[in-house]
Image (cartoon, rainbow, N blue to C red; front, top):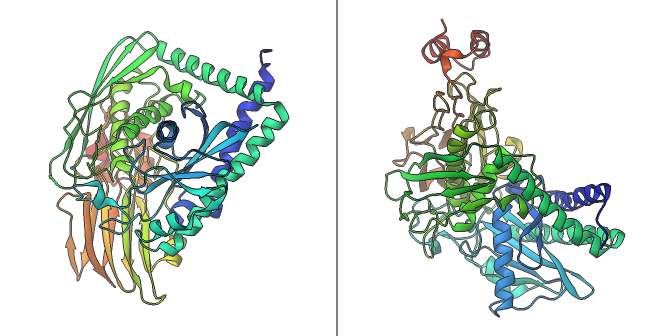
Length: 561
């Protein structure tokens, strides 16, 4: 086979990326739920027909799904091979959300579809969408005090939801009988399937134009180059072991922090991640399944080396020792609703805290590191229907060697953004009484952390139940190299004129609300980078002028009068 020329390889790399990007856009534009249509809590990718390894993923998809979908696709392939799954045919689409089969939490529902060429599977297209409800004990699925996965919702092994292109109405009926606001799910299901079909059409166009053999050769070469580039980046790091710790507020059941202990060993052109010493499996829903733990390490390294093209090759030099016996390797029936949205970000924070020692010029202080999961479910009497609202929110990013941290950035694990207030008020019986920058929340440093978000939402009609699975309420995001921690997360519920703060600070479920009750949230600010006393006085003065810090805060935090 003739070696690819550089131009053709570059064109095919961009073309595969474009297929995934177009799937992402189709999914969001066609979806009904604001969490997908507005917040983009979804991802699409192309995966190997042999082992499910990542070929390409959309640039607008959640990074946490980078590793996860390749493991869930691998599981589907393996289960088909050993007869636990029906064999595929053209037009089939499998659905799966089982966390223990290469997943995250139950609300992240994955579709997988084989793409055929000349009667054989050429590759798999997979995507994930966050459904706003999957059943379980509380609306939205974020059960803060679940002690078994069954309490969190409907768990699906890989089954064919579409058979030869036709929706299986019996399986669809089973799903709808186990989730809330089921009549709205058909829009998300059709959107998720449409994204895969668009991807299949666009991919076939590339294969028809360049030929299957050329594309296969390009995929192999892109994987090889990604591994080579990651190895080159790692080789520049001084040999040694870099250790760190990060903490989860609590598991939602036992009100004590969980520890993520990490040692990163750099030898030659590989990094080995060892989580020995982390907390044991926990009673509540802050356990992380293995696929999410691995993906959390991968996405953290993507933050550090964003120039490495994304494919399975980029992960080859990253060796993660299986954290058996810890809460980072959850086994059935451990509850896991907080793994993808919260624990994953603590894992990434541990990676940042270790690697900033080795690469101070490239790694930031800790970001807000919480998706701010706030689920509200109830009945809207004016519209005569039930609803489930899911709010995610941003926070501050950590400062770095050259810049202050971003303000109100998306979570570490994704590109998801808070749905627009106007959309939420149109879709649900709520009023946002306050939505603004959270002044003073950025950690002090030579380069300060970015600021979080402050919002307050009021229930306008009917009765509802609120649940929170957030984090960084007990500890703020870590500062780096002498920088101070960012402000921690805060949650206050006002009912009947009385203020209620959850005992676990960032986690509680099934809080009964009625018209006039309010929920107030302050998201974390990013950690500061470097000694605060070294911050340019002009920058401090400008922060004070803009109202980011008071004069008193500037004096106390930065020593500036």
